[in-house]
Length: 77
Image (cartoon, rainbow, N blue to C red; front, side, top):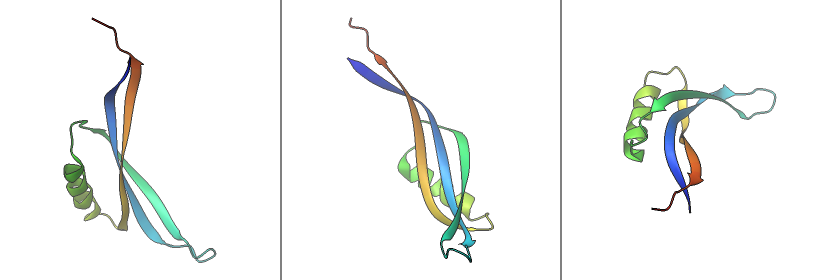
């Protein structure tokens, strides 16, 4: 049976840097924070992202979590 083992998490903040005058669309930039504890809950990451956003020059547009897992076949006992 195949199993997944979570081994890395990244917190990503998407910041709105304004509106492109030519296209009228938002200019979005991402900031990534590596080495996030894999046990961190969504609430903890939400609070952390908002704390980081409060010291940014641009406004927070979105928050996401990127998880990386290794998938392998579990050995039967």
